[in-house]
Length: 279
Ligand code: NAP
Image (cartoon, rainbow, N blue to C red; front, side):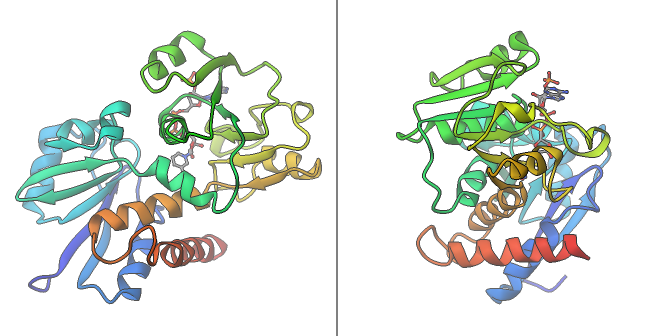
């Protein structure tokens, strides 16, 4: 590696499919930065100590964290952002003087992906896992959002996981009628082994904005059924690009800000990811 060149990466297992390297590399090139961004597949039995020593020994400047290391990475950090402390997970770590400083950018990335959309006062989130927690935390901090209904299959587990996040949360059975104007799917129903499944029945919505955090497939069964009913829809690729932009801001604090260059960087990362998925 060149002297002075900063080294970034994403860690996960599996990780070779990750779109983070191409999104960050596109931004590194655009802003002409002396840096590189790679991916590393680390063993799935990774411990916090091994993660720390891996990062320091490899002279990594900063890295993103994806499945299944978001929780162990939080434990490995010397410092955590308030949001990371709340959800006990990180997806972005910056290393300063061998100290690991962790943050989570998924929630802000989700908000960024909404663009100019005016959020309703009542929002529905389907699922109560990692992605849901990040989204719920980000939504709960907005004054305009009064109530977040979280629809789950296991009420007890969800209460335990979410009770400390916000007083705005109402936990409900996923089989209940979901009638909010914004419905966000943060379950894996619609992808992988659950490709043909949808978390809610088509009859449960009509004019809502249906946001699916899944982006592969491009349109889940939920989105296709919602579109057929005339609903506005969006997949999770924008959230992925949004979290990458928020991570990029932590990696390169002086390059872009919320006011300067953020939208441009988001559009670049999103179009880069879209192009890759079309290949
Ligand atoms: P996770 O932590 O495992 O959480 C999954 C949630 O879905 C849990 O609450 C789980 O409930 C629920 N669930 C699973 N199967 C269900 C079913 N059959 N019926 C009802 N609920 C069910 O996973 P995650 O990391 O949050 O990921 C969730 C989704 O978000 C995935 O589709 C992932 O692709 C997506 N995601 C997208 C982005 C992005 O940037 N676009 C980022 C992260 C995640 P139990 O607790 O009862 O199992």
